[in-house]
Length: 235
Image (cartoon, rainbow, N blue to C red):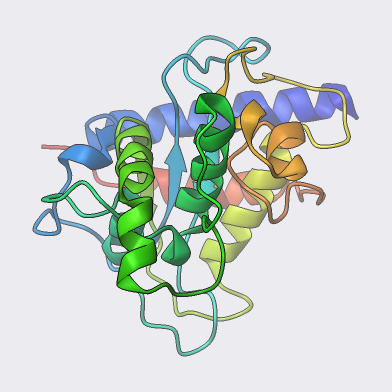
């Protein structure tokens, strides 16, 4: 089983390498704006400085996979979701209550730097006084996520339980995750996620919680290959 997973990871990363070539390389959220030519919907793959593959070849390992608008009737577009993760470009702030990615990165920064933010992650909204007290950490989270290279794959299907985007996201996470299995491409000793308060993040090696304990269907790689080959090369 481990040998098959290793083979499937090789295939996965070869496809992401092709996606990177076809899209002109990775981007940083800190340098992205809404006026760029974003697809309406898609799946995104984040990497992180210092996090490299050790079992499946050379290069950066994926540390987070995500998508958006999976519930029927949802209207969130790709850039809207990415901008929620990035935070506010002008102020450098953000809203971790609107982004689980920001929330869990924040918990890791709290532990690493011995911050004291007792309101972090409390409630789905907060008043102005609480937000002001969290502003410094929100800025730290924005800088951390903004420095992570990422790729995206356009998949413009309708929101819903059977969304192709959801299939790619779910299976990619399950394939990459080291949760409760012999590790492949484990995180570095200094990976920030090791400081996260979420056991699923620490043990999976990913900034993800959902699907890290799931199984993947290898046939998703054929679908991913078809989608990547449909991407027009960068001009």
